[in-house]
Image 1 (tube, rainbow, N blue to C red):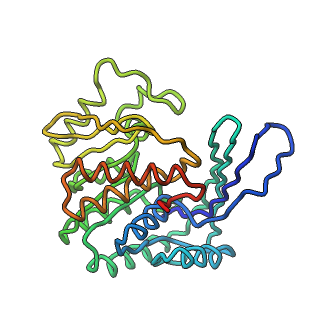
Image 2: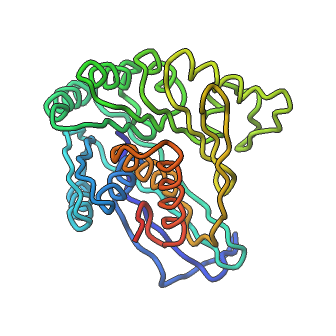
Length: 295
């Protein structure tokens, strides 16, 4: 519900407050939902991405999706797409993201999106909701999606944060999969300073995970970059360590993880095996320049 055109630029050395030039760059359709869709498609899982689009860059966005073989359904929002930029500095191996905020969508966009969702829902087994929604959508929209899908017997993965996640838990999604920073910001903001989760000697994150898993009957999976994945199992937080890979572009790796996890669960793999597949997909994405891909 918050699509973007992603410009990725790779520099031998990026120097602040100077003119920086590169001939290594690319433009892709992106956003967490599109990235997840692209990796699922590359894994051979038929899926359809539902979004809102508008403005002069919509044809470009759809051409890029078509080039990647993605199935996209969209409703008119009458708003221009945003651009986001990923700046890769080979000198210090840093990845900097510049994120434009979306323009607010008009109220009629939400009713269009709800109608399209209900038309598409019967043909799917899983509902995956990833990322933020553009300004202008109500706080009732995401819980409506989850409630409606659950009533139809669909399985649900939520890669969300904030009120959208909190308000959806009562409908008992199968899996919630934010990253650790998003989870802490949602349920334990006192542990967050800037863009970091502070040490948690009292085990507050673990206690919250155990409580939510028991109360709502869901699996909780928390990624944390190259650090071990946390997940709930038998009321306890477990760790799934893995060997980090030398990254090229980490943007979209969390979305690739979500896609790999979903594909594994759809294949009826045990949770640990599905997490392993998610880790593998995230690592493949990190080793490539393009966002939200495994090849």
